Length: 297
Image (cartoon, rainbow, N blue to C red; front, side, top):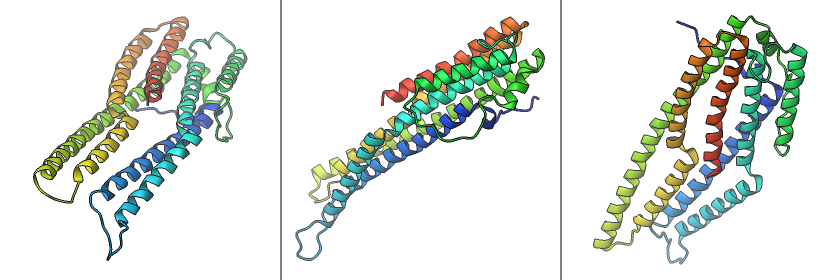
């Protein structure tokens, strides 16, 4: 049984590492902001179930809580709109994944860096493409990272014999990526089912609460609050995109299995260079779908 191989991010180009950190920070900021905004709206909804007045006062304390919660939601939304961390997330991921693809093509001898190119020529070509990629996303604020654009691992991998590079690429790139997709597909499929059950439960509770309010005279109004909570849950599910991600990652696993089969039968450097390029295109297709899904939000 082959031991799983994972190439660390520190072996990737400096542009990948800087963009990856910028993307992760943007993701944390964006998802955290959405979470806080939805929690504020949930608190506002719960505070409207019943009035709470102390003594002879005419001020509803829970109403004040709801007001503060709504103001908090407005501030979070304003912050997200002003800072646009989602753009840093998406652009950073696009730059990082594109840089990683170029690094793997260089290391494995794939097009446009076939192994018959000298190392110096391939290095110049890679640096030029990384510069073009950086210029394409000039608005992205990269994180400061002290690392080379061409790592020792990339040079050493490119200098290996054909058979060694073939094994390295199939195990370290294709199978490692496939394992990642499979794990993420399983996770997102499970989370999608859990949220589906939660939403059904909220909607059922809302129906029961509304019926109770209709037939029983009471000052409690839980129906609208449950509707708001269900709406917040739906917004969160749309943000996380568990269902579509599960399908996309499952499809990516199949694409990579097909790519591996073609890579295995590549018997010459020319055929290998083409198949590596095709394999990286298969990985890029999944990322393009991810970006398109996110930009619909």
